[in-house]
Image 1: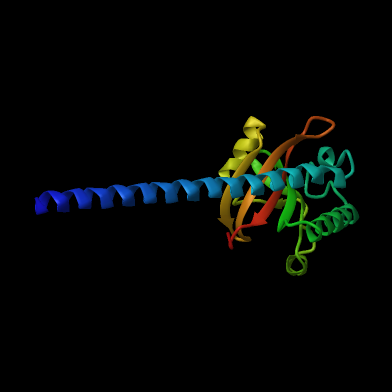
Image 2 (image 1 turned 30 degrees about the vertical axis):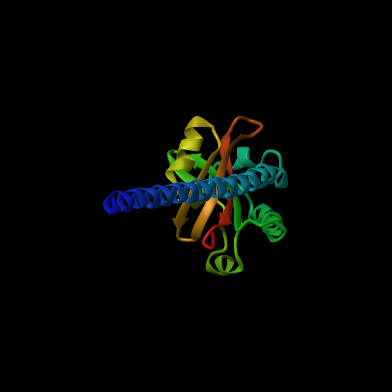
Length: 179
């Protein structure tokens, strides 16, 4: 009888622990999804707005490293950096593709980066996330968490089409190193 009671007690405890663990896992996943959705919504609205900061034909004219004047690059940089200062984003930028290579058309540039090089327009994006390349191909927005030389981010890439039909990506990054 004592043996049956012990076995019954052990089964009850194991059942209880299983239910508690399942509930904890469910709660964690639900909260994680809620936070990710909030971040993704913020990213989407931020990235979809940056196209209005440029001249309407800007991305149509992004055809080579010298197709945009330094003055226009600096004006775009000023606008983007101002946008970032009043937003939760770490970086906002647009990416263009030419001959299978990817370039920053209009990137946010930190003060430190501005000291490193004069021009960031048409700067190669060599470690572009594979999901961004897929966004170019499928023309579907994509969200991705990744790390690169600039940090650990949750990002969105929204395919946009310029007035003359050029596809480019509008992107926004949130630093998630503390999440």
